[in-house]
Length: 523
Ligand code: FAE
Image (cartoon, rainbow, N blue to C red; front, side, top):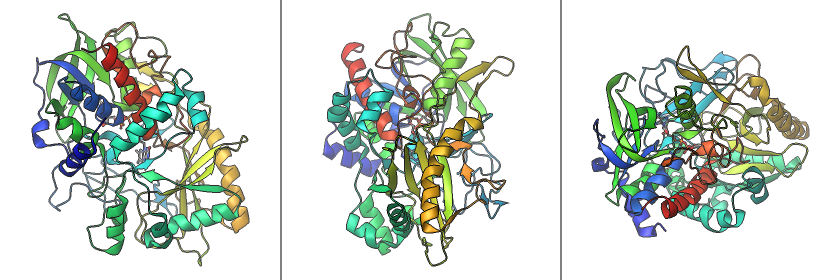
């Protein structure tokens, strides 16, 4: 187990510069991890702790250097080139205000948030050392035990809840909000208003754990430290306060002296190598996204942790191109958006939501037990720096629809078959909850935030899951059948839904799988 002292020391330091050593063409390494999000960071820590020299290859930047403004990341009110992955215009989840396009031009750069566009959905993902932990809201919630058993029936639920979830939450640095402080803090007025109205309308609410340091946030509210969560920082990165993976798992892995991270390298191919193991080919990128070198590294073992979309796209392409032709048909299938749908309500003028809003959500509406339409809705901030009388929610629903990834040989790209209409079950479930709240509170939906008079933000997701489902595309521990030494370790293992914000589930499942792999395969 990770000792508390190591974690604290690592948290202070982050990933040291010496760890950021790119691989060279022709290198031979024992273990290579593709991607540095949750699955990749867990894999890196456990392999290095087991004595195995490990290389992590990450397409995004290291995010350890301040820009000319003295800050590493930009905030949501003033997005610059650091905000988006290779776009010339921002692509905000809430893209309109009063029906007017709220996006603006930015310089093309390898920014931290990718709004990856497929035919029927935009999929938001973090890009950089730390993956999604750099851009997410930090909400750290365990799935309901019975729902976890339903989605992953081959996994021992007792071991997950007794061993791997506690291991994950400890290593992630999850902390609970001081509930007395929550009741008085200006920055959570928006959450209190939504909570009180939900309760008055017959719904249960719950506090949410987070990896953002709530003690730091208290000091932000008191005005004694530089503001981050209270400075409109979240989806383009946090300059302070957040225990992102580079400060937890990856920093602890670096402390073993056996980790090296190759940032700004995008893996494009994995195939069996003639000398044994696998040849991993990658493009070294500059900050415009241009390839400045192509390298091939031989690895005895390769761990796919490029996220649900990244891992699925890579494996589907490798199968179609005949580089890993024996991958099972289930690779690329079972993808879902965790039932995500966003919605906003307009508050009465006397019911202010606050000009100061913490970017880190701390409260949710829990209507999951409703068999007619389970909904778990995070009360989301709208950190515009001005009073807007808006209550925003990200609803997680039990949408049963799934999609798959398909290789297009004419373009050499991988598409996703998801259609926007497949999100209708999510909208229907969320509508049951928010119609009831609106009726009881005499409020209405905002229809000016998602474009074209839309009430429902149903065409994007923060929670891509599946594509390489555990026990279907892989064995019960993430091993890819037919290819000894290839493993999947990220959100692609989870079959499209986990009923809550997903990173704790992804982390705990990776902890379980890597423990087994180290015990049985590596040595
Ligand atoms: P992920 O963290 O996406 O890491 C994959 C990494 O692989 C990325 O760093 C990629 O850049 C890299 N990569 C991809 N392809 C390649 C390649 N070919 N070569 C090299 N590198 C590659 O995957 N979840 C919560 O539980 N709570 C929240 O509050 C929350 N809020 C969110 C807010 C936003 C705006 C977003 C976008 C997501 C949020 N999520 C939240 C979701 C969460 O961040 C996500 O489920 C995890 O990050 C997924 O973890 P993985 O390890 O699967």
